[in-house]
Amino acid sequence: MKIHREGRTIILLAFGVTAVIWLALLFLAHHWTVFHTIFIVALVIFDILVAAFFRIPRRIFTENANELISPADGTIVTIEQVFEKTYLKEECMQVSIFMSGTDVHVNRYPCDGVVEYVKFRRGNYFVASYPKSSDLNERTEVGMRLNNGKRIMIRQVAGVMARRIVCYAKEGETVKQNQEMGFIKFGSRIDLFLPLDFPISVQLQDKVRNAISPIAEIV
Image (cartoon, rainbow, N blue to C red; front, side, top):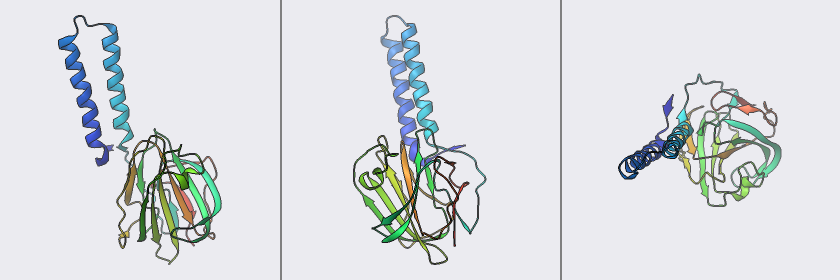
């Protein structure tokens, strides 16, 4: 298991602060008590949880040119027909994945294709599982043209704790299935907007994993 580069500075800072507090208590506390021990142990546990959030586990990726593979870890919270008005500008199927604080937060491209559209939009920080968060929260939209000419859009949505969306997508770039697309820090959501004729492979409340779980067939 590796640590994502987006988390290295945060993790070093967290452990550094804990070390400074521990040293300060050693020199300044007149008597070391059980309270001091509990406090330091709590800080260390918090640091370990922060490090775990930025983990990249070892996985055998699913590679299938006929399927869209999940771009994120999490739970399927939305499967519905909607009108996507920014890139696709047509009726499509929306499949949304809610990522809790314990999920792996690396985001990956679900298929091969060319990035045609990238747009960052400022917004609010409602709970990411809330249906309207897709349109109201801070988000980044990535539009792709697949090798068969069909188009999809991937939307990274910030949540209550997620205050920074990292997106590596660049317009005109050719990308591969399971290639890293970005990272959302501390709880979030991914929306996929797919053509109506793509058969959906998941159901509500299904647990999915990035680069492994099929989301839909490409036709």
